[in-house]
Length: 84
Length: 212
Figure 1 (cartoon, rainbow over the protein chains, first blue to last red):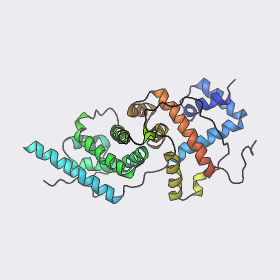
Figure 2: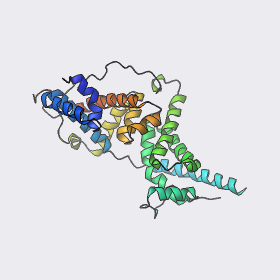
Figure 3: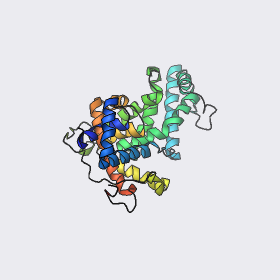
């Protein structure tokens, strides 16, 4: 018999769908009988989904121009080393 | 000598990654510029999450792409270019953290209490798409604040696994952790974030256990 603690310990693998069939059946059976674990699984799944859906902000233009300057300097230094 | 990394609109936007890597190795700076453009925002976000400091994050961003350029010949091609630069960025970011010796809270090597701190305090159902209640900007603020409040060992694992979408193995590799350590930290990070977000996302007018 699976306890809520057992369920929580398997939660990440359950949400990542990396548990084997036998364990999966036990976990799914548990959440049909335990509303608390069902809510925890559902809200944790949504937590992961919301974070995965976030695109990064575009790089601020000042940060990007300094990055490009740094890279151009680096590349130029590499090239002048090769030619000498 | 003036070299242009060509960050203006590039004709290579649709070119696949392995071709760009091969061209960059031949010294094609326009191709390398396209690789930079594809991943710069993600690397900057990752660096900000790990270092929690914008100036450090900018250093990490620059160092990552400079190192990538310098060591392109060492890139094996059996992993994705993105995974490879993430590993460089994580190393650079961790070095920054370690240098900040005055701040003891930033060590990733600290022993983590293996006690049962996966306690769940609040259980309340959320709407199907609770994030729709907030503007994109508000949502970004809520999510960033929640991640920032995690302890560094949990935060790094969460950022790599669930934000940058690396595999468990890649995360373990990038952070120098065992797979079980990644898994247990990830579980705790997810549960802690779930708890923090419940404050914003729980179904309105719905008490905990109301569905029982």
